[in-house]
Length: 161
Image (cartoon, rainbow, N blue to C red; front, side, top):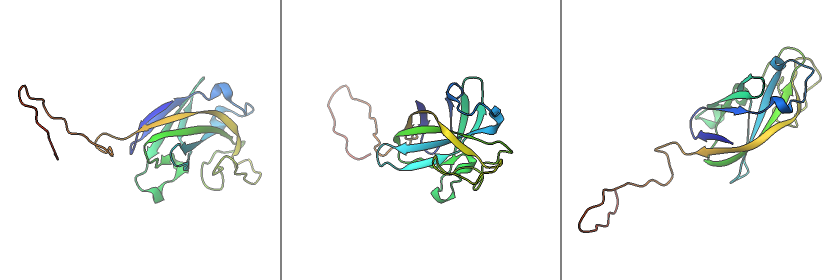
């Protein structure tokens, strides 16, 4: 499970190497396409996080982009709203030649098939999946409560602020 806050950058350590599909290429030729699915409304967001592959896991970094229309998911940018539970699926994408994560050289989703070329990535398949618990950032909660000190004597009913 990944824990993150809305409107912030976050990182995740995900187990990928034990399920690696394309073992014919070096780890430097692998990138991961992440598919986020919102449990509430079913909306889908994709992202190619910046990643560092270690022996047993991969460190993935996601960057929050405040303006939805400016999101570049090839550059590790996401705009995940609303808060709540998001399912995630991690797809392995491999290259034979030089790796360029950009439109036209990296698949846009898990079913995207690019023309055959060493410089184009190929989705090998899903390597892991799980849940992202996206919590509202402090001060941005939809429902906010004000705490008042209790008195020792008469009980008071507070209204408003």
